[in-house]
Length: 261
Image 1 (cartoon, rainbow, N blue to C red):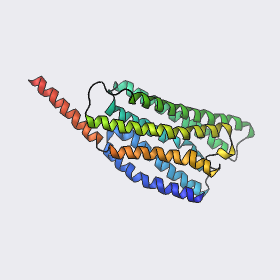
Image 2: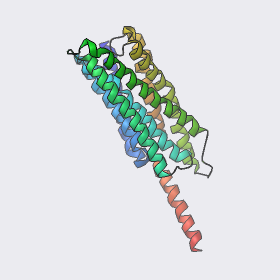
Image 3: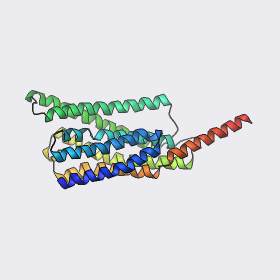
Image 4: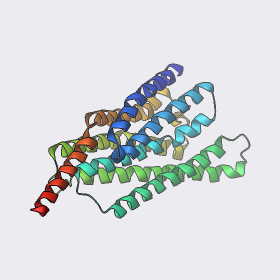
């Protein structure tokens, strides 16, 4: 158990290094996705340290730790769409982003409240049912958020830009989209595992105290594969923002020249 936690700490501590590099390279277009991915890695490190120290707060961190991974997927999907798909109207795009963040934030808040109360030593028996319902409602909202990312990423891949974009931008968008799709599969395993564990209250499925094999296969590995998919795509597309900016400037310059003539 301790060896698994130590390995997890070492892995996520190591992954923060390429994550910071990717964040610096992708610029404004990717800041949401890569910043949230860094937050996820940081939460996993903090949660692991607390778990090793025996802190009860580790359970709450484990419960809410899914949220930055979902937000990272959403942010990277947004960046991928900017390279691969036709642009949406800014107001529409950011309305969608804010609504998605609202779903995730609400889910996390409800989940954290319920989990915190359930782990309290002063909880009243009469409140157990209410707090359990809060936990279930919170994880249900996070499951909804995962489904939204999965549906939108599949839709985006099936709808490339009608107006031609540069090959480098399209290639970058494709790589990022596929990383989101891979993450959808494995984060889906993690989300559904949490949903089943929290709804059934099965001790063997408990994310902190359950069977080690189940925790590794349904929690640790799916999260890690999701992060590795993002990190790999992020490194492969490290120059995407620069190339996209150059292409836009060249197109604007070309249009200006045509107008002048």
